[in-house]
Length: 121
Image 1 (cartoon, rainbow, N blue to C red):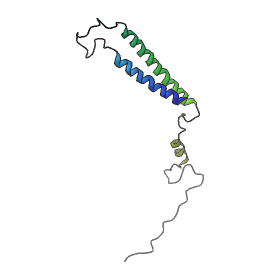
Image 2: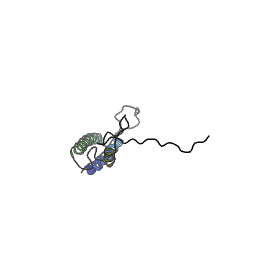
Image 3: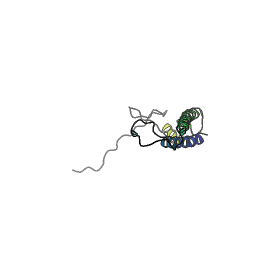
Image 4: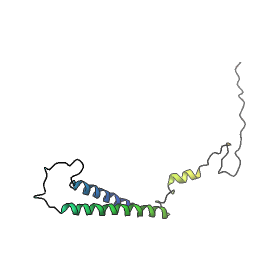
């Protein structure tokens, strides 16, 4: 389910990018010239594209919130902290400042250092 929502989110994001690129500038920013006119074009297209952009933006917000909610509440692979890496981290013993393992029930065994039997004179 989460994978489907993520794919849908990517499609909606690409569509929003296309909607924004198709729109004509409203006369602000770098579009400061009177060279273009809407004499032969459709004048209501900007409103449709603007409303479509708002709809796609709303869809992005709803999809991201739903993905976050589903990922936090599900116990499947999409749940936070249930990855293979997290499981390995949980299984490895963590070192204590005193040299022992915090996760083990037995105290750490200390091995005496072996004396070097070959001494050079």
